[in-house]
Image 1 (cartoon, rainbow, N blue to C red):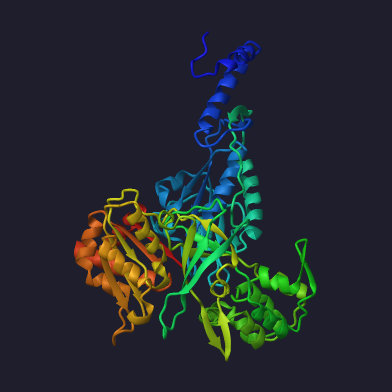
Image 2: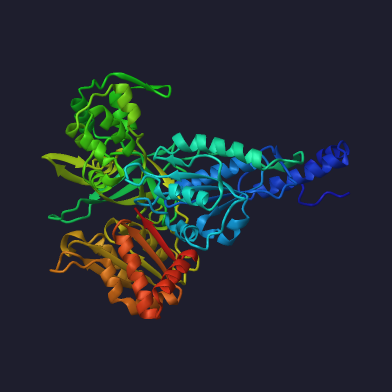
Length: 597
């Protein structure tokens, strides 16, 4: 047999000698291996292969893992669980809630749900339709179903993991069998998620029994490069820290530029930047003084020993109040007032406490004694903060930009602030900060660049739309761009004003509607501008435009949602149910996307 001309002549003897020494089975295996190497080299040089087990099963049963995610955490946990189940040769499928055909629920045998909580006990955007179906009379009885639910949430909200607990109870109500208690993971996700996943994997092994021995397949490995992740962030340099509100503004909003030079990080418009903050030295000292504790005391938690001051500075939440801490503190303080706030009928006062007070206020209002060890263990681990990226790499290359509002106010003559915004605004140019990229695949520009886009982003919600317009300009997208922006005052709070004016002049921004709420006697917000432009807005959407909303989840996003429903009824002649179905369908098509917080 003649060797092909593209094989170097010096290699012919080696190939012939190898082929003569192997039987047919080995030659077949080697053929598959070289095919894998060739495919792998489209991306990177492939080292030696590994043989992995692929199991064929005779059972028709499979596990469905359904997830609902707002910022990507639930998606990441669900993917990790799916990989673990699949690696054992068990049949599993992973599906996002808005891609799940609800008619299939009645036929499921084994279902795991990983669900984040949006706001105060509400489902993430991609799960609204699934939850509505589950709550409706259309939901089927599920006597054959075995299930488990893992909730991800934030215990600084009154209804911690509220939606996952509701789903868990609803499935039981429909007759399904609960395999384990619903997990409720706080911002330190793995503390609860890891043991929940271990138990879920063991249940999957029992329910999805293997009946055929594994067979070998060959997978070509690619070289591993150090990954930048949530737990292994990149130490980046701050290039610019610039105030972008005018003198006299009630807000301190900054534009930050951060270097990605030397990192493998890349991002797309719509993604978020994760930042690991540290607590201010001043706040740490206040807490230590209030509790009369020595910051130099050694404290060991889960095998790690640090000085108490270091625990509080770099590893524990000190600004936000959480329900678990309040429960523990109320017992120590012996305060009936504080205990009453934690009862179901005290939910309104409890919510007000969370919104208006910080940890230091609780420690001072209801004094109690803590040992250093017990105090550190009672506090929630410090978690990274996520910020919508305000730049496109097509425009800024090895940089990432943020639009940041410094959360700061005065309480009883003393300053209070948000941990991450204070950390970032006090950084000097040249300082380093630990960062990582969090993908947000549900908040992407349309693949069809001829599609129009409508962007609704008051305040710092403007951030991703600066990235969108930069990207659309760089890629010469032919679709039109319409921006709705609002803030209190035109003269002091018009963020990126000159950029938007230039974009209008250059044809990169086609329409701009502004709502400065306090520049007239009656407050005007972006939802009012939407209603004023109802006819054009509805026409754009009906012609295929994508609608994006970014900003406050508790008020603005809900008001904008109601405005869009009203516009559908007014301009489309739809009734209330039809308008909701219309908006749900836009969301299902990826044409109504929200990045709210």
